[in-house]
Image (cartoon, rainbow, N blue to C red):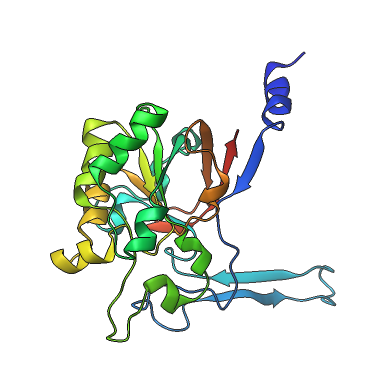
Length: 250
């Protein structure tokens, strides 16, 4: 009778996949964030209060905590922050580029334009407005911070990610709206090391695009044809926020 209700019934026949990590006090975050920046579930109004019998908690966390969305103002001064984006900006066609085989051979692997073109040869062109996510299976290392960083005996970081050429391809040759990955950073470790900066992340955010970091379960999502929804608290002025992310997939 009602079209959207019927559409929801139809959507529930598909697989719904959680793409965000569960978080607690022990969840990892970037080493540059000061200790004490995470305090989750602190009681500020307890049971037994004569005013009202209920429990209220406070939550303190950095914007870049756990699975999170980054807005342009995170890296680019005076650019768009959280309030810029409406609900219509937070649902995307999802393209999952699988580079797990390459990562098994080289933990510092950076996805190439040829990898993306091979994906398109198999699944079709990346559609306008897509969120393009890198599947590396790196999320299976959560919540071990040393494993996520790929910390070597010499203190080096070793993890896969994007190359600058690849992000330019999805945004300039194609018209993607966002990118995502399972790692802590956009840039593969080798790319960041060579540039002395997170050049891929800086490029993405300077383009006014969005990115979602520390995704999980991309191995449970169809490479093409899925839809992804990114949700976060409606807090103004945020450079980034923890996100609940899920896919609806065949």
